[in-house]
Length: 235
Image (cartoon, rainbow, N blue to C red; front, side):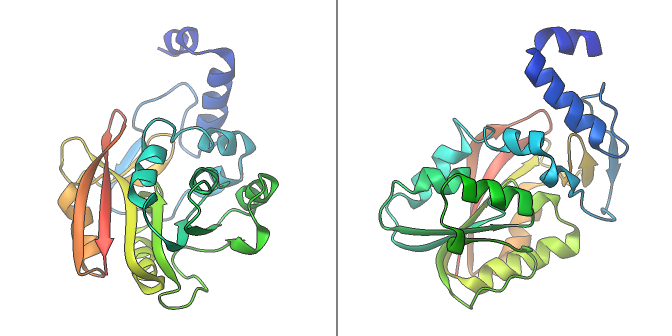
């Protein structure tokens, strides 16, 4: 299997996959299958966010699906917008073409924030921060969004993340999350990175604790285990 995958991949992609997979505890570089499952993670896998090669991968993965979709959500909006777990800021750069959006962002990785500043994102508008406990004011942002981040948190962290988003968001918060293809609660699993792979309703209940209205909309993103869903959370 390793030989087949390697033959199909360009050398640079194979090197990147091998490096990422090999750097994870318990993950073999010659395996692209699910590694572990469990009901609840003991902790998050954060080391990847300080891996320069993984940072380069994050700069590319949302093309042709979620980066287009977030534009559809925000293109006609006006006001202050927060990119939650913004990485190196590729989505912020895309949204800069909409003049009525005042864009901010944060990420837990100082490496990714440094890369965002190097891209030209205003330093005063981007910072290192923890999504479960931020320093923003109540209702400071008109809108907020996260893309492919929330599912990597612990159960406690998921609730804290959503509660925080509801605290500093005045109008609507958008969250793109993978849900299981089976639409069953498959729990905590590890592929390239650990994440919750649960049902659409499981996630909707999490958001409904903190928002008055929650809508689920399909995303074009998908992989072997999951399909993408946008959760539109209205205060």
